[in-house]
Image (tube, rainbow, N blue to C red):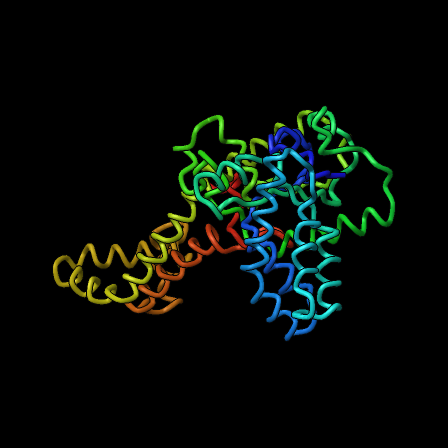
Length: 352
């Protein structure tokens, strides 16, 4: 069980977990409030009214959060927000308040002991401090490794596995999936767009980015607390962190080249044909070999296949090459490789 009021965002538990059972994120307070209101308040008029009050709720809540942090108290985030919602009086229906209170009771949110997320940012940029959360998932098999790493902080504790607990954890997981990925401003000296430029000490923050954290699909029922699983997951996540931006950049280049080819390709082929017909014919033959699969075991076999297939037009060449580049770009960037995971391209561990 995660107790956010005790969390220091040290990330020790997250790096040690042998499964992907501790998804985590940092978010703006406004984002959390709007996500809760938009997805859990059923009446459209009440939703609109609450959304309109978000700036005032956040401002008052932030002042209370700062006060609590400076006093080194442990007032839960949910109680602060409930206090502000209650102060709205007749501006919002009781049903809407109850629905919002219900999801706040489920979602664990830390702010008072996570200076890198709240206090430090708030001091540099008033109104900019955020919140941090760990969502214990149903992939957890109860090995206790995270509790051991957390130690005296007491932010993670072992508790009996009950239906009520599972219901709470599941509700929090569902909410976490409604949130956007962790913004760069909360990743510190880890640069998600250029991990190679990041400070080594900040690399563990790559696990706050969902695509990295989910690089290794877990929940396999492996032996509880096995250290090698943690190392394997770390290798997968850091590979994802370093390679995914490169793969997405490659995909963007391929999409761009495919677009240029479709626009200017026919003219380029005509120019090649006029300048050097032998090279032009060799190019078309290479296309037939590589893209259309008409290459045979010998020149004679290839000639027979080409004759049986019929003439390959210049338009066929352009469309075929564009299709290959677009498909490769899609595989690198938009493919959903695993059901239920991000549509973020094929695994970087298996692409060359």
